[in-house]
Amino acid sequence: MNAEDRLVYSTGPDGALTCPDCRKSPCECPEGLAGAPKKRTQTEPVRVSFRRTGKGSGLTLVEKLPMHPAGKEELLKKFKKRLGVGGTVKLGVLEIQGDHRDLVKTELEAAGYKIRVIQS
View: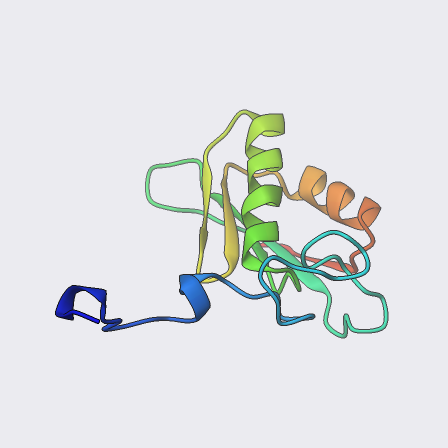
């Protein structure tokens, strides 16, 4: 083993994210969807709120979503495509440009989540 083959720093096996439920990467949960909602484990409702930002149109925030980070990215991608807006995931919170609380609430309820809409 030479000096170039040595592992200096690692965040995990191969730097991959692991599912919080099955602790594997890629996810091997029986539901087949990474971080799929489970009625027995969801104790807190998902919070959907709106925050006005400076001169812009504001952000719809989706917090406390019990889902694997890869699942959050996939869900955000679907919302962005359907709404025709931008967005990002910051510290586990989905941020969607504009006020889309009603549509986000409807979509998440259809997926089986309990929702709490925070009025501002």
